[in-house]
Image (cartoon, rainbow, N blue to C red):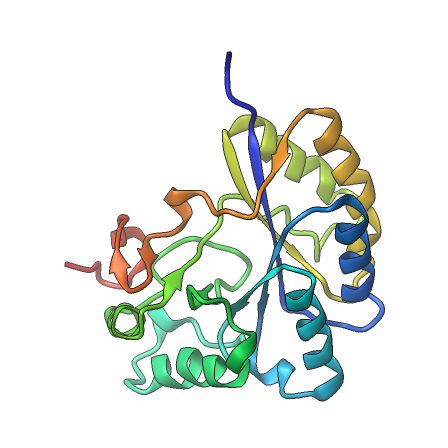
Length: 220
């Protein structure tokens, strides 16, 4: 018997009142897990931090998505960038952060490539025992707020284990989340809390996967 396909849900760039609370209610109703990657600058705002606290309280994992969501670490020559973008965001997360210190780099449109990380950023992640989380499905829900489920479903159907990036931001895209989850369920895909190993090249500070394609200049 062929094992069921798996799907890991992740949400970036929230939380937003009126969006994230609806996503959380839907996940709770269907008893589904997810990982929320948040930016340090955003959770400094008490109402938004409260939504992250709710997500954590409901059993979801919380990850670091840089402080400013504006610096591609692999394209920056600022030696202080890793501390400013990764370390400062982790400080803002505090006890909301997942025990594995999950970190998702800023990808400027979800592009996997050498602009994601620098060698200095990799060193920072390793020294700080972070877990680097990438992705293998970005259906660009911020551009096509109604049609993204079709692209996401195509990714789910073509690979054994999908790590999907969605955005709990006020574009209207999350109104399509119930329809997408219905399709996933009808297809017999299992939604899991774990993350596919190929999307996690650094785990708790240890390099466990290939980095050359996502580090400027490569990483030896």
